[in-house]
Structures are given as structure tokens and as C-alpha cells.
Length: 403
Image (cartoon, rainbow, N blue to C red; front, side):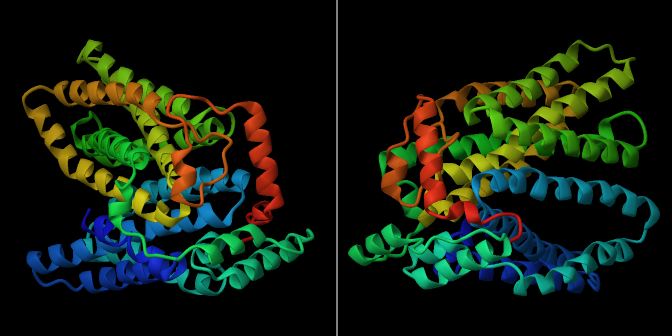
């Protein structure tokens, strides 16, 4: 929570790539030091720093990938590319914990793979969109021409002519977190974003942390709740490709919330059915959670996108802090956590319909473009076709998975 509230402003100044690798170094380096902790206080302080690095590099990686890839590849990256590997790591955790009962050995085994990211510094480029906002047009064009060469497609003679002219005409200023509430439209988007991330996080982490209260082996239950995320991300991927964002988010939130509410109707003796319903509830909430990153990135313009996703992620951390208290309510009544989480999830699922629609639209570059987004109006097909053709003309489609 601390990191997501402080790191986003750095990215507009230093770039996506530098922040990504700096925070990965913080996470991996302090995790190694944490293995040698000599007291609980030392372990907790180091764990705080590790967590700050982890969530920052997750957000930075997501933003960087969203900006260097074309629309179709961006959706694939945001769901399957990022989230599937998160689910795989989630599934590996209970397996490692089952066989490695010493916490130092377990922590070291989970930390060492971070060193494999070092060579990626020479492979991953900086975000061309960020470079354009900084007036570094030549560097942005060089990255896109390199991508075009790797993909064996011709690059346009002039890629960022319009952007270059706009950059020369206006003063390049530094954006701060206050820009998330500076205009009426972005202020409403920010408020709705904070609410959504907070509630979906309470549902996601509440279900995950309630694993020990489920019947059966806790290691197996943890693995199953991790495994259910794989189909969740596949569903999210297909929804993002074919269904407007608001309806996708609303549908998955309602699925998760209604199933959690129905758990109270299942007799206590039917342990397997209760577990299955919890997994279905998590499937819906997880799908909505994964789409939140994509949707939030599409709502905010390039100049404040990292801060927008960061403030949403910070709200998510607040939700993760609150969620254990929902779980503790199970000591009074085992159904109470599900009733509260289900109710909040259903309410937020309906509120999602008040978000602006971004389906089929290119990523906004500046605040003015964001202000033109209509609240409850769906994008017309003709508008989407025109905007997609503009994206092709600008050469953004050249950035594919080879980057």
C-alpha cells in the first residue's frame, strides 16, 4: 500500500523500464537479506520493503507491457501473459510449502528465480508512448522501427509526426498525483476506480485467506483456489476480446457475489458443494480482478496512467489489509464472511455500469482525450473501426509480442 502510493509519480519522470528493474532489484535483494533475519522485527521490516518492491514492479511491468504492445497483443499480455504466470506461481507456493517446512529454505527457494530477470534489461525496451510524452520522438521511433524489422513488416516513413508537432507546441510539464482529481471527469473515474479495486480486493483476498476455514487439507485447498485462477484468466481474456468492458466486469462481479451469497443456503454437511461454490465465487472475482488492470490502464491517459493504476493498486492493498477482518468474522458465524463479501461484490458489480466504456478505443495520450469519454454510452461500431484504423496508421500495431 505504501509503495503504490509513492512509486507511481516516479514513473512519469524516470520511465517505465528503470522503475521496473529498480523495484525488481529491491524485491529480490531484500528477500535474500530476509532469509538471514535474526528476529521477528527484522523479518517484518524487510518483508515490508520486499512487498513495496513487489507490487511496484508488478504495476510497472503491466503498464510497460500495455504501452509497447498493440491492442490484440495487449489484451493477451494483460490476462494470459501476466495473470497465468501469477496463477502458476500461486500454485507452486503450496507445493513448495508442503515439501519445504523450514521457512528459510522456503523463502530462499521462492527468491532465487528473481535473479533470472537480470538479462531482460537488454531485451525489454522503454515505452514509446512514454518517450513521446517526454519529447524523445527519435528514441520512440527507433524502438518501433526495430520492432517492425523483427516482425518483418515495413515501418511508416514518419511514425510520430502528429505527436512530435504537439510536443513542440506545448510545454512538457511534470504530472503529479493531484492530476488524478484535477478535472471533473478524471475525478469521477478515480473515485469509481478506488471503490472497485477496494471491493474486488476484499473479495479476492478474503476468499484466499479463508482457505484454512474450508474443510480438508489446507495445502490442497490453497492449490485448488490457485488452480481455479487459470480458467478465470482465460475467461477474462475472451471477455476482453469480445464483450464491452462494463458488461464483462459487471457479469463477473455478479457471478462471484451471487455465488458467495448462495453459500449460506448449502447445508453444512455438504462440504464438497460448499468448497465448489467458494471456488466458483473466486472464479468470478478473480476474472474481474484481472480485468481491472486492463480497464484502469485504458481509462487513464499516458501522462498519468501509471499513477491511475497505482492508486487503484493502492486501494487494492487497503482491501487486502481489511479482508482478514472479514475472515475473522467466521469465528462468530462461518457464513458471515461470505454474506458480507458477496453483498459488497454484487453492489460494486452494478456500480461498474456507471464507468466509461473503453472497448475498441485506443489508449488516450493526454487528459483532454480522457475527458471526451462518455459515461454510459457504448462505443459505436463505426467509431471503433475508425479508431482502430488510426492506431494502424500510427504504427502502434507494429509493437507485437516479439517485444
